[in-house]
Length: 194
Image 1 (tube, rainbow, N blue to C red):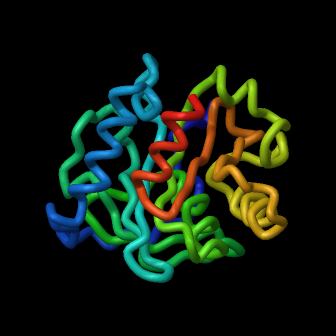
Image 2: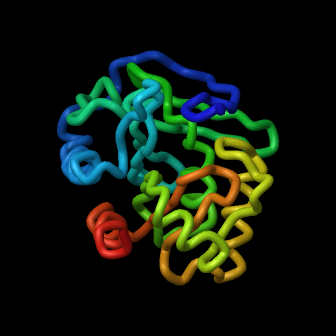
């Protein structure tokens, strides 16, 4: 099991760049999802789930690696993704924590869906099982946090196969992606669907 581990090459610029006012909205919705159990930590200590919001065209703020088990995050628990390259499997981020292991997945959605401003990755075993291959699903052999996952998600979006703003990560047990124009919209889709 490789849950929670970063697979991309990270150029992490450790700097105190994230301000408290920048995370107020994202933290509000993340706490709702944490309280519902869609973001959290397994008994083995591995965290799951992450949330991001677009800051600029290809810049986004995302919850940091290994923060799943923390109910209320501080500015130090977020990272600003400033650059990414799927082919090279690398990413540049700034902040006091490294960007989430799912950051390339979030980047894939932002880079091919200009109307999307929020992406949320949650875990829910029952919903994953019921939606698997019944809604937009990435291939079962495609692992999370890889360029292949990023490309598979882009193929689904560009092929207009994701009308409900939900993607099942076929090769990532329990993993679901929800996205929308706003954090509130993406969160409401989760709360209505699960």
